Amino acid sequence: MEFFRTIEKRLGNLISADTSLTSANELPLANYLKDELISGNIKAKVFESGKNRGSVYAQIDGRRPEKVLIHTHLDTEKEMQGSPYELVRKGNLFFGRGALDC
Image 1 (cartoon, helix red, strand yellow):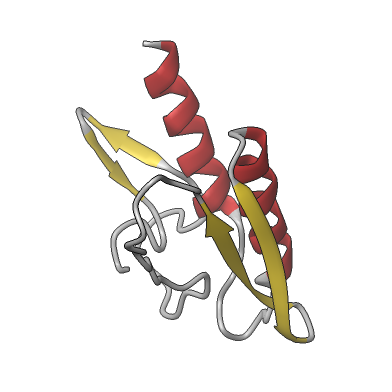
Image 2: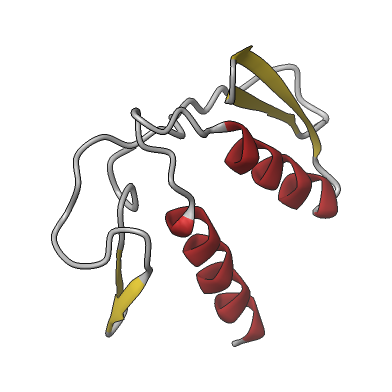
């Protein structure tokens, strides 16, 4: 159960970050993600693409030569109903700005 509480807390941290296009505030979230990955022994770097804008690159070394790229985005666009920067749990479902659009 502790694992799921940790995941829920991390998801809440992600959703609470204002990364709307108008805020141009991705860099703090990118650094948060980098730090979380590093704490899990995953190599991670942030690449700044502009003022307060950034991308996270992470690598997990393996024994096979094949590589997998997972690409998503940090910015969000339109406002949603309710409290957009708060994680809301309804049973086993989670709601919040940017929770499922990538």
